[in-house]
Image 1 (cartoon, rainbow, N blue to C red):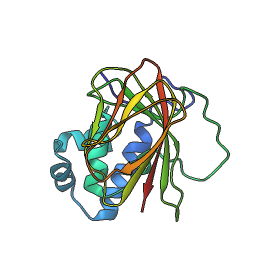
Image 2 (tube, rainbow, N blue to C red):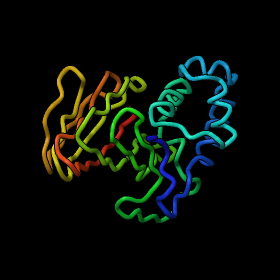
Image 3 (cartoon, rainbow, N blue to C red):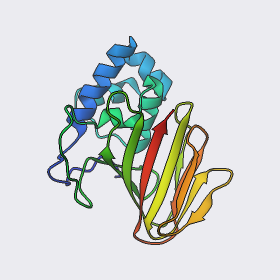
Image 4 (tube, rainbow, N blue to C red):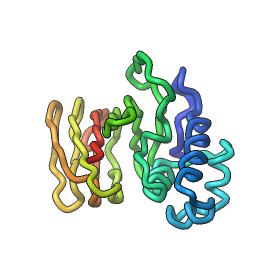
Length: 192
């Protein structure tokens, strides 16, 4: 099952971070558990499990909850106080798609006052990652590091290779589909 990575030391099971963040953001928004679950299109029991730290969510479930709470995805995985951090290749708090062979590792969350998130993407050929629109004004920037991928808006994706860069609106349906094994990229979400 494609769910949160639990083998990427020293970032074992970021579910504790997610549980605290979901609870905090739901209370901050003044919403009941039932209302957040309804807005996200998930079962209330699923949200309850996630808030108690016992769930094992997919990337799609977490994105839906972030949209329902109107928060950037990175707020679920961001560490507390800023500090020097080195994240070695293949390590870090990772989430996996339930629909495709796609993994996102949060490299840097947007600090207070700044509005950007940076992810390291690992994807393999097969069904691509189709993303629903994010919050209004989100712009995505992608740089391909290895392999080839079809990236961009769902209506006009572009084939990219190593070193290629693309920017596109993230508040419309968009895709990332690996065309070669070992495709790697850096994704920056800009919240404007």
